[in-house]
Length: 275
Length: 300
Image 1 (spheres, helix red, strand yellow):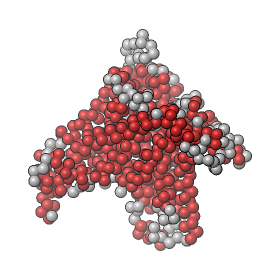
Image 2 (tube, helix red, strand yellow; image 1 turned 30 degrees about the vertical axis):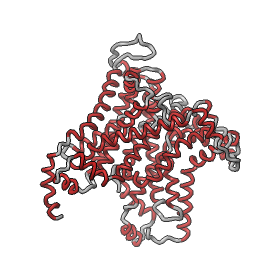
Image 3 (spheres, each protein chain N blue to C red; image 1 turned 45 degrees about the vertical axis):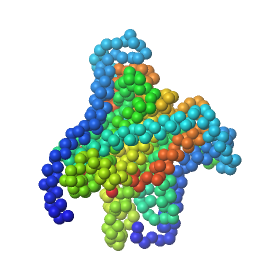
Image 4 (cartoon, rainbow over the protein chains, first blue to last red; image 1 turned 30 degrees about the horizontal axis):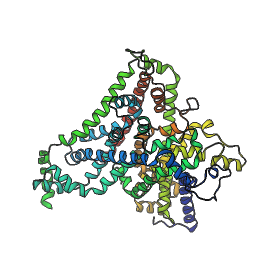
């Protein structure tokens, strides 16, 4: 800001800024520190700030719970659902952005309204459908659910990115006889790659952190990291250092992901309504 | 270029040659199925006697499930808890979101790093944040807060026993403040600086500027924040499951959690479905209001 500020004001702002940052980040920081403590140090009162760091918790988590399986499930389910949602959403968003008619806006709003359908309201039917189709505790089952629950948001985000592409470019291609598929593949996708990337990233983040369906519809084989962490909330949850190590392993990938993409995320998160 | 610009409207109309039906069909069909099939099943079950633990009890129940539901106080408590949770978290996140947006809009040393730290909680999965807060921070014996309280000479607070709803609001708000901050901060960057400069020249002080220039500018992004948070906050589940399991008593049992207990712990499908219908109705009341706000935003 170009406004003139006194030196004291500037120092105060810097202190306030860093103070807020510290407070907001503190739980994550505290957890990270605990992950490298021994169990005894982790529950010590007064809290220990100086201790000998250890990696034993990470080894223990791995031994107890087959961490790679949970991580793999998270990756496969998040990526699977994201790819599927984007494949389904791209044609729809293309149609809505380039060939809007009177009903387009209603259609988009209706899609968004399905996101308002409380998952818990349909938990029982979904559980029974999954049971009858043998989808309980399968990766495919979660991929389908994640795809459907993110689809409205993915369509909206892609729509807002596509809308910014000048119509003339696609029209010119159409004049030259390019089919819809070709226009999408050779023009639209390359032009909106950053937008598609941020849509994909947000979808991955939402799937990665989703807890309701994964806690209720998976038990062991297809359980993602949310499930692994929840298993530490049992009476054995007193193993704080191990819990922290497992948590760190679960959030680190997605946290770094989020940090790297935060600027693009904003645009996606608001469907382009805030610039 | 001139030609193209002039020709655009005509060609766009001619462009109807592209059939949009097949392009929209997959998304629309899937969402339609996703909406209607479970919804219809929920409605149907809600009219049945249906308990997975007792297969002998079957048949049409009429509105009995609803009657039972509304004559117990549990449903009202959970609706109230839901509204309290969503309302409090919305207020807290917006107040802090505006504050952080204004703060992190100012230049200071290392601002970009500080920003990253502030938004970090948004990327933490709900189960993890619930467990960190429950065990490492709010634990009445070994938690950090207990130690701080004791060192200052106060008795330790047993958060989840004595202030269960407050604790959950704190945890959920901590997760969503970064989201509000992220959106509002972006909006701040499009604020008209010259207008602020002019206002300052005229002698406007901080609070007046905030009230007359910054807040009006943030109204639209705030409505977006409210809408998106509502979608997710009505469904808050993991934080409750991991920390209080709805208790003590029914103090933190939201509608979501209430149905979960009925359905998957007591296997009372009929009763749970009736409560599910209530949840859907409640969400739709909220949605009807919110959707209108979005629609207005679209007409920019």
